[in-house]
Image 1 (cartoon, rainbow, N blue to C red):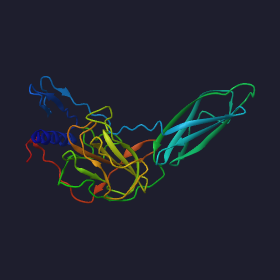
Image 2 (tube, rainbow, N blue to C red; image 1 turned 135 degrees about the horizontal axis):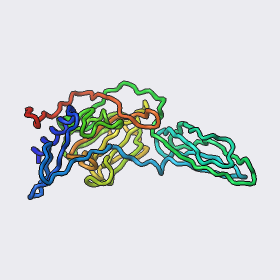
Image 3 (tube, rainbow, N blue to C red; image 1 turned 120 degrees about the horizontal axis):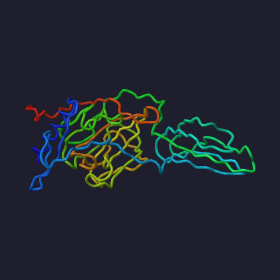
Image 4 (cartoon, helix red, strand yellow; image 1 turned 90 degrees about the vertical axis):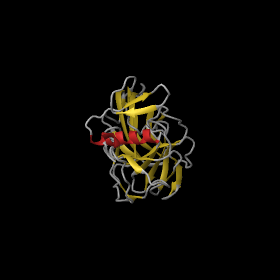
Length: 298
Protein backbone atom coordinates (compact mmCIF):
# COMPACT_ATOMS: atom_id res chain seq x y z
CA UNK A 1 0.00 0.00 0.00
CA UNK A 2 2.81 2.41 0.90
CA UNK A 3 4.60 1.70 -2.37
CA UNK A 4 1.42 2.39 -4.34
CA UNK A 5 0.92 5.67 -2.47
CA UNK A 6 4.53 6.70 -3.17
CA UNK A 7 4.13 5.86 -6.84
CA UNK A 8 0.89 7.82 -7.06
CA UNK A 9 2.46 10.86 -5.39
CA UNK A 10 5.35 10.62 -7.81
CA UNK A 11 2.96 10.57 -10.74
CA UNK A 12 1.32 13.69 -9.38
CA UNK A 13 4.70 15.39 -9.19
CA UNK A 14 5.45 14.40 -12.77
CA UNK A 15 2.18 16.06 -13.76
CA UNK A 16 3.51 19.41 -12.61
CA UNK A 17 6.08 19.53 -15.39
CA UNK A 18 4.27 17.51 -18.04
CA UNK A 19 2.12 19.36 -20.54
CA UNK A 20 -0.62 16.74 -20.59
CA UNK A 21 0.02 13.78 -18.33
CA UNK A 22 -2.75 11.20 -18.18
CA UNK A 23 -3.07 9.07 -15.06
CA UNK A 24 -4.83 5.68 -15.20
CA UNK A 25 -6.52 3.81 -12.37
CA UNK A 26 -7.04 0.07 -12.52
CA UNK A 27 -8.05 -2.78 -10.23
CA UNK A 28 -6.39 -6.18 -10.58
CA UNK A 29 -7.95 -9.64 -10.07
CA UNK A 30 -7.24 -9.44 -6.33
CA UNK A 31 -9.07 -6.14 -5.96
CA UNK A 32 -5.87 -4.12 -5.54
CA UNK A 33 -6.20 -0.56 -6.90
CA UNK A 34 -3.12 0.89 -8.62
CA UNK A 35 -2.26 4.06 -10.54
CA UNK A 36 0.02 4.46 -13.54
CA UNK A 37 0.87 6.86 -16.36
CA UNK A 38 0.85 3.96 -18.86
CA UNK A 39 -2.30 2.73 -20.65
CA UNK A 40 -3.32 -0.58 -19.08
CA UNK A 41 -6.08 -2.99 -20.20
CA UNK A 42 -9.18 -2.36 -18.10
CA UNK A 43 -7.84 0.91 -16.66
CA UNK A 44 -9.90 4.08 -16.50
CA UNK A 45 -8.59 7.60 -16.94
CA UNK A 46 -8.58 9.72 -13.80
CA UNK A 47 -10.67 12.84 -14.41
CA UNK A 48 -9.69 15.57 -11.98
CA UNK A 49 -12.33 18.19 -11.21
CA UNK A 50 -12.17 21.58 -9.56
CA UNK A 51 -11.63 20.52 -5.96
CA UNK A 52 -13.50 23.23 -4.09
CA UNK A 53 -17.25 23.07 -4.51
CA UNK A 54 -19.39 24.78 -1.90
CA UNK A 55 -23.09 25.58 -1.88
CA UNK A 56 -24.08 28.89 -0.33
CA UNK A 57 -27.41 29.30 -2.14
CA UNK A 58 -29.39 28.80 1.05
CA UNK A 59 -27.24 31.30 2.95
CA UNK A 60 -27.15 34.10 0.35
CA UNK A 61 -30.52 34.80 -1.23
CA UNK A 62 -32.90 37.43 -2.57
CA UNK A 63 -35.90 38.62 -0.55
CA UNK A 64 -38.71 40.76 -1.97
CA UNK A 65 -41.15 42.78 0.10
CA UNK A 66 -44.30 44.14 -1.55
CA UNK A 67 -46.37 47.06 -0.31
CA UNK A 68 -48.89 49.19 -2.20
CA UNK A 69 -47.64 47.86 -5.53
CA UNK A 70 -43.99 48.74 -4.76
CA UNK A 71 -41.34 46.00 -4.57
CA UNK A 72 -38.22 46.32 -2.41
CA UNK A 73 -35.46 43.85 -3.28
CA UNK A 74 -33.07 42.85 -0.48
CA UNK A 75 -30.16 40.44 -0.42
CA UNK A 76 -29.71 38.50 2.81
CA UNK A 77 -26.30 37.14 3.76
CA UNK A 78 -26.47 34.51 6.49
CA UNK A 79 -22.81 33.52 6.21
CA UNK A 80 -20.03 34.58 8.58
CA UNK A 81 -18.17 36.44 5.82
CA UNK A 82 -18.85 39.47 3.65
CA UNK A 83 -20.25 38.56 0.25
CA UNK A 84 -19.96 40.42 -3.03
CA UNK A 85 -23.33 40.31 -4.80
CA UNK A 86 -24.46 41.17 -8.32
CA UNK A 87 -28.19 41.62 -9.00
CA UNK A 88 -29.53 41.98 -12.52
CA UNK A 89 -33.14 42.21 -13.74
CA UNK A 90 -34.40 41.14 -17.15
CA UNK A 91 -37.72 40.64 -18.98
CA UNK A 92 -39.06 43.77 -17.25
CA UNK A 93 -42.55 45.08 -17.92
CA UNK A 94 -44.30 48.00 -16.25
CA UNK A 95 -41.22 48.70 -14.13
CA UNK A 96 -39.74 52.02 -13.01
CA UNK A 97 -36.55 52.59 -11.04
CA UNK A 98 -34.10 50.25 -12.75
CA UNK A 99 -32.45 49.40 -16.05
CA UNK A 100 -30.98 46.11 -17.23
CA UNK A 101 -27.47 46.86 -15.97
CA UNK A 102 -26.20 44.73 -13.08
CA UNK A 103 -25.86 46.23 -9.61
CA UNK A 104 -22.89 45.12 -7.47
CA UNK A 105 -22.54 45.64 -3.74
CA UNK A 106 -20.88 43.98 -0.76
CA UNK A 107 -23.27 42.61 1.86
CA UNK A 108 -21.62 42.26 5.25
CA UNK A 109 -21.78 39.02 7.25
CA UNK A 110 -25.02 38.10 8.98
CA UNK A 111 -26.89 41.07 7.50
CA UNK A 112 -29.17 42.14 4.68
CA UNK A 113 -29.07 45.08 2.28
CA UNK A 114 -31.71 46.73 0.13
CA UNK A 115 -30.52 46.81 -3.48
CA UNK A 116 -33.37 48.52 -5.26
CA UNK A 117 -36.98 49.70 -5.06
CA UNK A 118 -39.29 49.06 -8.01
CA UNK A 119 -42.51 50.88 -8.75
CA UNK A 120 -45.06 50.41 -11.57
CA UNK A 121 -45.38 52.70 -14.57
CA UNK A 122 -49.09 51.92 -14.58
CA UNK A 123 -50.31 51.68 -10.98
CA UNK A 124 -53.20 49.53 -12.12
CA UNK A 125 -50.90 46.80 -13.45
CA UNK A 126 -48.50 44.46 -11.70
CA UNK A 127 -44.71 44.45 -11.96
CA UNK A 128 -43.07 41.84 -14.18
CA UNK A 129 -39.33 41.08 -14.02
CA UNK A 130 -36.87 38.22 -13.70
CA UNK A 131 -34.07 38.65 -11.12
CA UNK A 132 -30.68 36.98 -11.44
CA UNK A 133 -28.34 36.82 -8.46
CA UNK A 134 -24.61 36.10 -8.56
CA UNK A 135 -22.32 36.24 -5.56
CA UNK A 136 -18.91 35.35 -4.21
CA UNK A 137 -17.51 35.08 -0.71
CA UNK A 138 -15.30 37.93 0.43
CA UNK A 139 -14.80 41.63 -0.23
CA UNK A 140 -12.83 42.27 -3.44
CA UNK A 141 -11.53 45.59 -2.10
CA UNK A 142 -9.46 44.13 0.74
CA UNK A 143 -5.70 43.82 0.40
CA UNK A 144 -3.92 40.58 1.31
CA UNK A 145 -1.14 41.03 3.87
CA UNK A 146 2.17 39.18 3.77
CA UNK A 147 2.10 36.10 6.00
CA UNK A 148 4.20 32.94 6.34
CA UNK A 149 1.96 30.03 7.31
CA UNK A 150 2.96 27.67 10.13
CA UNK A 151 2.50 24.05 9.10
CA UNK A 152 -1.23 23.24 9.37
CA UNK A 153 -0.74 19.82 10.96
CA UNK A 154 0.87 18.08 13.91
CA UNK A 155 3.30 15.22 13.37
CA UNK A 156 5.44 14.29 10.44
CA UNK A 157 7.68 15.10 8.84
CA UNK A 158 5.53 14.85 5.72
CA UNK A 159 6.25 15.77 2.12
CA UNK A 160 4.51 17.62 -0.68
CA UNK A 161 2.88 15.26 -3.17
CA UNK A 162 1.63 17.96 -5.58
CA UNK A 163 2.71 21.58 -5.60
CA UNK A 164 1.42 24.79 -7.20
CA UNK A 165 0.35 24.62 -10.86
CA UNK A 166 0.33 20.81 -10.82
CA UNK A 167 -1.31 19.66 -14.05
CA UNK A 168 -3.19 16.82 -12.34
CA UNK A 169 -5.57 19.02 -10.35
CA UNK A 170 -3.86 22.32 -9.42
CA UNK A 171 -4.61 24.11 -12.68
CA UNK A 172 -7.92 25.92 -12.04
CA UNK A 173 -8.18 29.54 -10.93
CA UNK A 174 -9.31 28.45 -7.47
CA UNK A 175 -6.61 25.78 -6.99
CA UNK A 176 -3.49 26.71 -8.96
CA UNK A 177 -1.40 27.67 -5.91
CA UNK A 178 -2.68 24.87 -3.68
CA UNK A 179 -0.32 22.38 -2.06
CA UNK A 180 -1.03 18.69 -1.35
CA UNK A 181 0.82 17.10 1.56
CA UNK A 182 0.81 13.30 1.74
CA UNK A 183 0.13 12.12 5.29
CA UNK A 184 -1.53 9.20 7.09
CA UNK A 185 -5.27 9.39 7.55
CA UNK A 186 -6.10 10.71 11.02
CA UNK A 187 -3.24 13.21 11.25
CA UNK A 188 -4.30 16.25 13.38
CA UNK A 189 -5.05 19.28 11.19
CA UNK A 190 -4.70 22.67 12.89
CA UNK A 191 -5.35 26.30 11.99
CA UNK A 192 -2.35 27.91 10.32
CA UNK A 193 -3.74 31.42 10.76
CA UNK A 194 -6.24 33.18 13.02
CA UNK A 195 -9.72 33.89 11.72
CA UNK A 196 -13.39 32.92 11.68
CA UNK A 197 -14.72 29.57 10.48
CA UNK A 198 -17.20 30.37 7.70
CA UNK A 199 -17.95 26.97 6.14
CA UNK A 200 -17.49 23.31 7.03
CA UNK A 201 -18.41 19.91 5.63
CA UNK A 202 -18.16 16.87 7.87
CA UNK A 203 -20.42 14.11 6.58
CA UNK A 204 -18.87 12.84 3.39
CA UNK A 205 -17.37 9.35 3.23
CA UNK A 206 -15.08 8.15 0.47
CA UNK A 207 -15.24 9.93 -2.86
CA UNK A 208 -18.85 11.00 -2.37
CA UNK A 209 -20.42 13.61 -4.65
CA UNK A 210 -18.35 16.65 -3.66
CA UNK A 211 -14.75 16.90 -4.99
CA UNK A 212 -13.74 18.82 -1.86
CA UNK A 213 -14.65 16.00 0.49
CA UNK A 214 -14.93 17.23 4.06
CA UNK A 215 -13.35 20.63 4.60
CA UNK A 216 -12.96 23.73 6.77
CA UNK A 217 -12.89 27.28 5.33
CA UNK A 218 -11.51 30.08 7.53
CA UNK A 219 -11.78 33.83 6.85
CA UNK A 220 -8.57 35.61 7.90
CA UNK A 221 -8.48 39.13 9.27
CA UNK A 222 -7.07 40.54 6.00
CA UNK A 223 -9.98 39.12 3.99
CA UNK A 224 -8.16 36.12 2.55
CA UNK A 225 -9.39 32.60 3.24
CA UNK A 226 -7.60 29.38 4.08
CA UNK A 227 -9.23 26.09 3.06
CA UNK A 228 -8.34 22.64 4.40
CA UNK A 229 -9.74 19.81 2.23
CA UNK A 230 -10.25 16.02 2.08
CA UNK A 231 -10.69 15.69 5.84
CA UNK A 232 -11.78 12.52 7.61
CA UNK A 233 -15.51 11.98 7.96
CA UNK A 234 -16.85 13.09 11.35
CA UNK A 235 -13.54 14.60 12.44
CA UNK A 236 -14.28 18.32 11.95
CA UNK A 237 -14.42 19.82 15.46
CA UNK A 238 -15.08 23.51 14.75
CA UNK A 239 -18.34 25.24 13.88
CA UNK A 240 -19.31 28.02 11.49
CA UNK A 241 -18.92 31.36 13.22
CA UNK A 242 -16.26 30.07 15.64
CA UNK A 243 -13.14 32.16 16.14
CA UNK A 244 -9.87 30.20 15.87
CA UNK A 245 -6.20 31.03 16.44
CA UNK A 246 -3.00 29.47 15.17
CA UNK A 247 -2.85 25.90 16.46
CA UNK A 248 -6.60 25.42 17.04
CA UNK A 249 -7.62 21.83 16.28
CA UNK A 250 -9.79 21.74 13.15
CA UNK A 251 -10.10 18.09 12.12
CA UNK A 252 -8.18 14.97 11.10
CA UNK A 253 -6.71 14.37 7.66
CA UNK A 254 -8.57 11.97 5.43
CA UNK A 255 -9.09 10.65 1.92
CA UNK A 256 -12.52 12.03 1.01
CA UNK A 257 -13.82 13.67 -2.14
CA UNK A 258 -11.73 13.87 -5.32
CA UNK A 259 -8.70 12.43 -3.56
CA UNK A 260 -6.35 9.77 -4.89
CA UNK A 261 -4.74 9.00 -1.53
CA UNK A 262 -4.60 10.22 2.08
CA UNK A 263 -3.41 13.83 2.09
CA UNK A 264 -4.21 17.41 3.06
CA UNK A 265 -5.03 19.88 0.29
CA UNK A 266 -4.34 23.40 1.60
CA UNK A 267 -5.10 26.53 -0.40
CA UNK A 268 -5.36 30.27 0.27
CA UNK A 269 -7.93 32.28 -1.69
CA UNK A 270 -9.33 35.77 -2.09
CA UNK A 271 -12.26 37.31 -3.93
CA UNK A 272 -10.91 38.64 -7.22
CA UNK A 273 -14.26 40.12 -8.28
CA UNK A 274 -17.30 37.83 -8.20
CA UNK A 275 -15.03 34.83 -8.03
CA UNK A 276 -12.50 33.22 -5.75
CA UNK A 277 -8.92 32.82 -6.88
CA UNK A 278 -6.01 30.90 -5.39
CA UNK A 279 -3.11 33.12 -4.32
CA UNK A 280 0.55 32.25 -3.65
CA UNK A 281 1.67 31.63 -0.08
CA UNK A 282 4.66 30.25 1.81
CA UNK A 283 5.03 27.90 4.74
CA UNK A 284 7.13 29.20 7.62
CA UNK A 285 9.13 25.94 7.58
CA UNK A 286 10.70 24.04 4.72
CA UNK A 287 8.71 21.06 3.43
CA UNK A 288 10.44 18.56 1.15
CA UNK A 289 8.85 17.15 -1.98
CA UNK A 290 8.50 13.45 -2.64
CA UNK A 291 11.16 12.10 -5.04
CA UNK A 292 10.02 11.41 -8.57
CA UNK A 293 10.07 7.59 -8.60
CA UNK A 294 8.13 7.53 -11.86
CA UNK A 295 11.21 8.69 -13.79
CA UNK A 296 13.86 6.97 -11.71
CA UNK A 297 14.39 9.59 -9.00
CA UNK A 298 15.63 8.59 -5.57
